[in-house]
Length: 191
Image 1: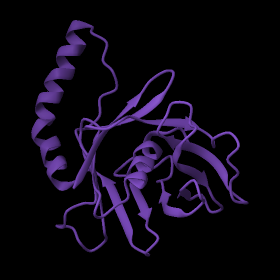
Image 2: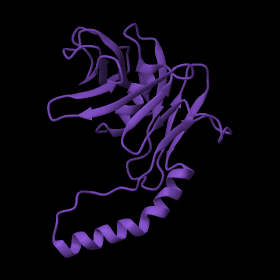
Image 3: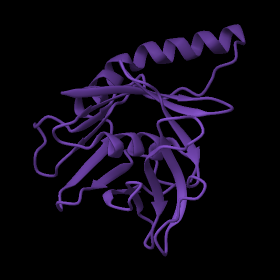
Image 4: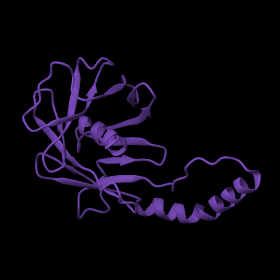
């Protein structure tokens, strides 16, 4: 089965909204009264309620810069490695699963890069039209999607994908939904 959800960053709160299920609330830090293992710095908590009383997972920074996704009982679900901040061309994301498997995700799959090349003339025309009409333009980005796959399996189905519009799809037979939620937040969360 596939879990589909979207990110909804707001000025007051940050949510992940799975299709057909209750929203998952994202809070900074660890829940109150929830001790963390030694050497862990809390980053954010994924919770079923807005107050954060029933956490689904806590994401902490461990030594070495990895983000660890922990259950409320401190069992590690996965480790996330984010690209360096200054990496601009096709940043690479990694999900290290407990069984030793590693999922690599790069922005810009081959079909999305080809689509970008096909749409490039239209984007240039759009930008010229904006310049001639003095309309403000928000930051424009290339229409790229990200797919997290195992190395050496370029044509296999990805356990986690992000569409151009920011919709994530996670195959629950290949990836724990809490790890998918944590990767979706960590990709865009302030570092």
